[in-house]
Length: 205
Image (cartoon, rainbow, N blue to C red; front, side, top):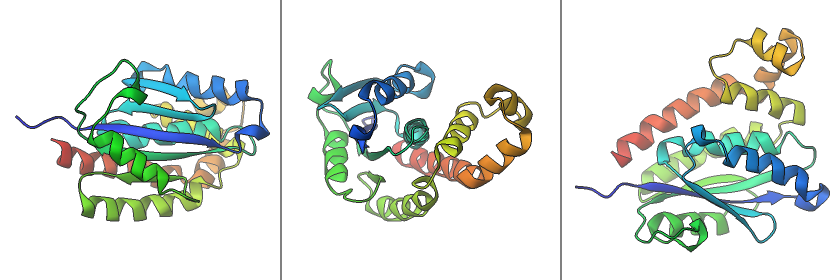
């Protein structure tokens, strides 16, 4: 029986000192504490770094939820490295566990430099193709304004809601929601997430 793959996301807050730490800390903890997004365990360390474990299928959707949640706040962003692979040692703390997924996440994070999102898996061709896709998506996502990020986040986490309902929840007009989703690249990014889940599922199953 093949060993089940996992995903480790390693990240840090960009320009974290430009905002009171409790603001972005509360924001990111709200995401981490939601059971529906597939997080198995998480940890914040070194002030503005975090590491979490999730399933490969949900990893990219979760990463974008984190990004949109953080970018709701002006002048800050988040860098994230998705590492997929096996896990051969499990500790109560995610930062003390080990295995291929952890190694891939660490290597990927060290290689980010100016990039904000990348992935490393056991499959070279998969990485080559998906890192190009993530670079293209980042051209839009890295430039989200706070209001755009907020609208994207609400739409992403409530995919069954109509624009009219989102407008009521966010106290905006339906036209504002429509324009915000367009600026965020919501339709194209949603299609990308569906494609990612299909491709990664084919690899890990």
